[in-house]
Amino acid sequence: MSSGLDRRRLLQTSAVGVAGVAAGGLGGVAPAAARPGLIPRIPVKTGMDRLAAKNWGELRGKRVGVVSNPTGVDREYRHLVDRMHADGITIGGVFGPEHGFRGSAQAGGSEGTGIDARTGLTVYDAYVASQAKWAQMLTASGAEVVVFDIQDVGVRFYTYIYTLYDSMVAAARLGLRYIVLDRPNPIGGRAYGPMMTAGYTSGVGRKEIVQQHGMTVGELAKFYNGEFLPAEAGRSVDLEVVTCQGWFGRLRAGDTDLPWVLPSPNMPTPDTAVVYPGTGMFEGVASLSEGRGTTRPFELIGGPAWDYHWCDAVVAQNLPGVEFREAYFTPTFNKFANQMCAGIEVKVTDQAAFDPIRTGVAMLVEARKFAAFQWRVDNTSRPYWIDLLTGSTRMRTMIDAGAPTDEVVGAWSAELAAFDARRRKYLIYSRLGS
Image 1 (cartoon, rainbow, N blue to C red):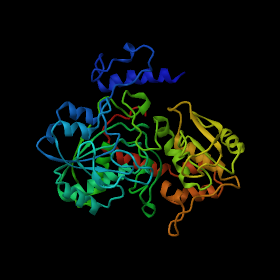
Image 2 (cartoon, rainbow, N blue to C red; image 1 turned 60 degrees about the horizontal axis):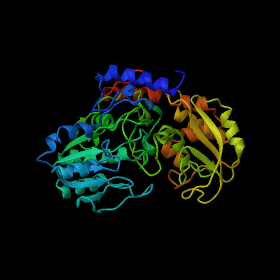
Image 3 (cartoon, one colour; image 1 turned 90 degrees about the vertical axis):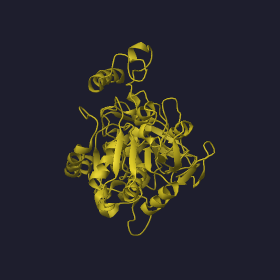
Image 4 (cartoon, rainbow, N blue to C red; image 1 turned 30 degrees about the vertical axis):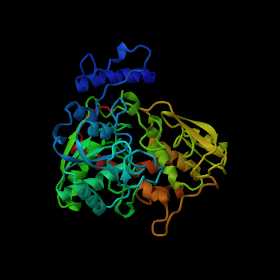
C-alpha cells in the first residue's frame, strides 16, 4: 500500500467481511465514511462491552472477584469495577497486578492491600502473589466467579499474563468459574521470536511461550487451560471467554476505535506497544537506557557513553518499516537519571512491514560492537537479565560471538513453527493475512 491511510481502508473493508459488520457500524459507532477528516477506525466491541450489554449476565446473584487495572474500561472510560458496583453486582474483592488496581505504582511496584476510595471494596495486592497466596485471597474474598479484564500488550515479559495464569491455577484448585473479558492484542495476532526454556523462567517469563505470543488474553487463557493447567493445578479451570466483536489478527491498536489507556506507566501509547517486543530487550543492557524516565520509553534508546556512530550502524542495516533518528535525551528516573544520553529514536514508518524483534536484535548486534556495551548482570545463578527476557542463553552468546542479525533470528525458526502450530486450536479470531 502507498500509505497508512490506504492500508487502514483496506483493513476496514476486510473487517466488514470478516465480522459481518452492518453498514451502520457496531455499537452506534459511525462508519469511517461518515466521519470526514478522521483516520478510519475499525469498530470493535470488547468482552466488557458485550457483557455489560447483557446487564452482566450470569454474574448477577454471584459473588465476584475481579482481576483488573486501569485498562478495564469501556469506550467512555468507565471502569468495569465501578460500573459493576453501581449496577448492583456483588464484588467480594478486587485484585491488582503490577502497578496496582488504579495504576499508581511504577515498574516493579504495587499499591498494597487496602480499601478502594471510590467503591469501598477491598483491593488485594496480587503482584508476584504465589498460587497459594492467590488461593488465600480468593477464599478471603468469598468469590464464586473470577473475572479477568486487563489489556495485555502481547509480549512474554509483560507480567499481566502471569497474573492471569496464577489466578487461573488458584481458581481451578478451588473449583471456581473463571471468565475472561477479552480485549484485542494491540500488536496483532502474529507469533514471533524465541521460546522460553524451562531453565530460564522467571517473573518476566513464567511459561513456555514465544517472545511475541500473538494471542489475546482470552486465547492465551485457553492455551494455558489446555496446555499447562492440567499438570500444575491437577485439572483445567471452568473457563469462559467473552470474546471481542470485530477484531481479527491483522488489526493493531491504532486500527480500532477502542480508547487507549496506558497499560503501565511506561507504555503510554500504541506506538510504544508496537516497538516493545524488540526494544524491551534493552532492559537487559546495563550501558543503555530503554527510555524509561522520558516521554518516549522503548522508542528512545541510549546512554551517556554513546554517540552517533551506533545510529549510523543500525541505519546501514536497512531494516523494513522503520527509520532511526540520532537522538539525545535525559531520563528523569531509572537508568542514567539526570544524565544526558546519546543514542537512537526508533521511528516506525510501516507497521505491517516492521518486525520489532528482528529490529531489536539488529540494534543489539550493532551495539555489541562498541566498547561501551555491557550486559546487565543481576545474580550469580543466572547472571544475565537478557537471558531471562529472551528465554535462554542462546541470543546473548550468539551476539557475543559476533553472529549477524539473520543468523540470530534464524536460530529460533523451528521452535517458533512448533509453537505456532501448537497454539492454533486455541485461537478464537481469524489470522488471515496477519
